[in-house]
Amino acid sequence: MLAITKLGHPVLRAKAEPIAGVDDALRRLAGDMLETMYAHEGCGLAGNQVGVARRIVVIDTREAKKRPSVLRIGGKSRPVHKHMPMVLLNPELELVGAPESGSEACLSIPGVHGEVERPAVVRVRGIDLEGNKIEFEAEGLLSRALQHEVDHLDGILFIDRLDAAERKRVADELHEMAGGMVG
Ligand code: ZN
View 1 (tube, helix red, strand yellow):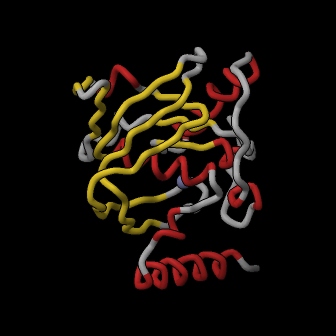
View 2 (tube, protein in one colour; view 1 turned 135 degrees about the vertical axis):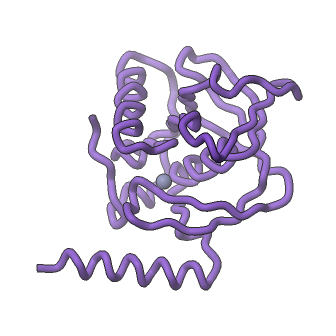
């Protein structure tokens, strides 16, 4: 199990470095990240969130039964569960489709959630743990999770993407939580 970095830690604002190649240490990191994500009942985790500023994300959206995911390869729909858990290295996203609003939370900002507008569909390119190039299209929760996690690699948090009213509400929530911890 890895420790999850929390809001205020500078690594969450760092731009993560590309990964040059897959080795045993990286495979171990991916396994530890998945274990840590499952232990906290998250559906995604990025390198920065375990203090590693490298471009790796892990995702598993299978448990979110009420928020389905869609995955297409070469334009054809594929069973999402066959591609989970997903480990993506050096992911690049092309955002397509109209923005839609959805609820998000983050293991690095416990106790806070907010409505975030993001494009509905992403085209994804990256490398898997075997070093193979992969390319697919995602929609639904998987699209949102990918955008949230790749944001982490660029030092962006979901609270940065809230509208003014949501931002105010979340700031109050964060303030209250910080206040609760004093003394
Ligand atoms: Zn997050």
